[in-house]
Image (cartoon, rainbow, N blue to C red; front, top):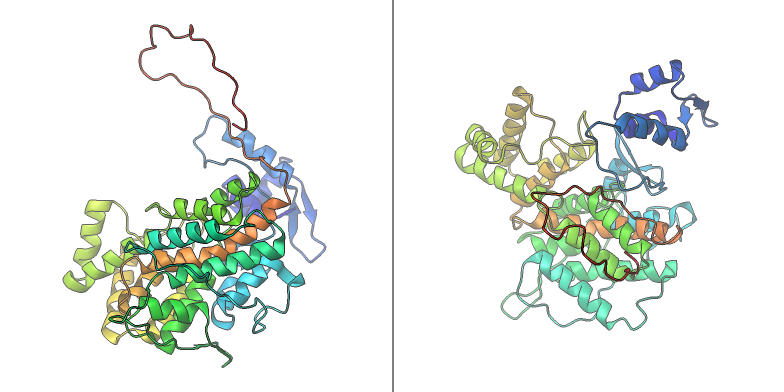
Length: 422
C-alpha cells in the first residue's frame, strides 16, 4: 500500500488531484491502521498511471520496484522509517549503513557504537596514479579478484564485504609515501558528545583535506549519511539489475560506480564546485550569468524529486557555515539569494557538498568521491533486497523504429541462432 504523497508522485500529480480522482471513482482509498492517513493499492495506482501515460511523454520506468529501504518525502529521505536529516548529525555513517542493511533486526540499536563492526580495508598493493574515481574502481576490481569465495551471497558475508569495500575505496584516495605521509585522523564527535575514533568520516577527511578538523569530520559524516541512499536513483537501479542476474557484490558495486561516473548523476557537485570558484573570483552575478550562458542550467539548484526544496541541503549548509571563513559563507549566501531573486529552483545537497569541499581545500571531485563511498551503503541494502526477488526480472522491451532508408536486403536476412539470457 502507498501513502498519498507516494501515490501522487507516481502519478505525477498533486495530492489534491489524487483525492479528486478518488471522488470521481478513478481510485479507491483505504484507511491506514496507523492513523488518519489514507492508503492506495500499488496495483491500482500503477494501472491508472499506465492509462494516463498513453500518448504522453512521461518519465522512463523499467519496472515498479517495491522497497523497504528508503522512502522519499518532502522532509527528505527516510531510511527504514528514520529521517536521514536527523541521522546526519546524531549517527555515524557506519551505523546508518548497518541500519540500512538490517533495520530493526540488526546487530544493535541504530547509533550504538560498534554495531556495524570494524570497517577494515583489504590488503592491496598501492593503486596506480589515476583520478580518484578510477582508483576506487581499481580497488574494487582488485579486492574482488583476490576473494576466492566472492560468489558467497549470504547476507552476513555481503555486508562484511561491503564494509571492507567502502573502507578500501576511502584508503585508495591517498597512499602514504615518505614525501607525503598520512595526515592524522580527527575523531568524529557526534551531537551528543560521543566520539567515534577511526570512523569513515575521519578517514575521508584526512585524505581529502589538507587540514581536517573536528567540524570538517562532522560535515563529512553528515554528507555520507545524507548521500547513503536515495531510493531508485540511476546507479542504484544498475546495482539492482546486477543483483537480479546474481552478480557478486564486487561486480554490483562496479555497476553502481560505472553509472555514477556520468556527469548527470555523480558529477553534479563537481560542477557546483566550479560555480563557487567562479563566484569567488568574479562575483556571484557573473558566475550565475556565465554558467547559465554556457550550461543552460545552474548546477546545485533544483531537484526532480524535491519541488519545494531539498531538506538535505539545509543540514549540510549549516555545517558548512560552522567551518568556513566568514567571507566564504557570505559569498554562498549571496549566490543563493541572487538565484532566488530570479526564481531559480531552491539549492540542493550537491551545492552544499560542493561548498564544504571548496571551503576546506578539497579537490574539485571530492563531492563525487564522498558520494561514491556513501552510496555503497544504499547499494548494498538494495542488493540484498533484490536477492529476495525472482532473478532476471528486469527485461525491458523495445519498440523498433526504422531509421533512414531500408537496406536493399531488408527482410531477406536469415535469422541467427537464438541467444541465451538476453
